[in-house]
Length: 230
Image (cartoon, rainbow, N blue to C red; front, side, top):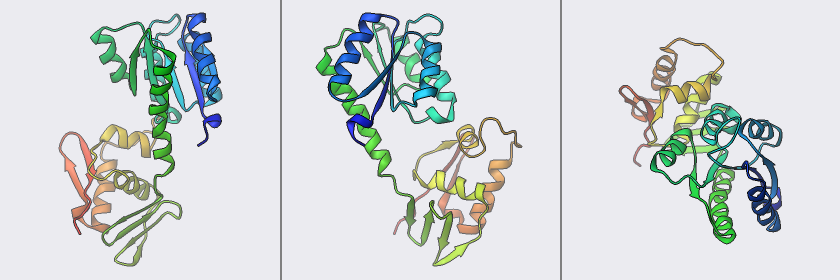
């Protein structure tokens, strides 16, 4: 992605901060929109769908921590990069920000060159996301997201959409433990009410179709995909 295509939302209740940081970000080519409080930030985020959001902590209407929490509750902002830029340097503010879903936490004052370097480093994650493969291959198992196809031992398997989506989610990050709540949110959505055993049933069906060795239950937490050794 080219720099001029990258959209940044800057949120701060101090006009001088907005002006100075916007100027420096725009000078190097980023598209910048601003908001002066948390509620305005939520509206702007939904309108512009920024790649990076830079938040202050102490703001009127809605503070930065709660703004971050609300953004992370929205599916469209699950992977948006969120950086806090604030004068609050206390440990509890730092911890609260990361608990809310922040990717980075930087304290003011900060030199423009240092801030730009921080932004550049965070935005590298966009390039990594762009190169994520739609085709996953493991030993004798192939998962094709584009065609919704699963091939095991050179034979194509019949798999309902939700089973496929669950398989692809787990297999996209082998070894990562996906919590049950996150699986439910990613596959069924927060607005859909399903039974508590729904995930378990789908995992059981996947085990029956492609083999138990690919899945591990982490008791009381969730599930993870095991990449078999060649």
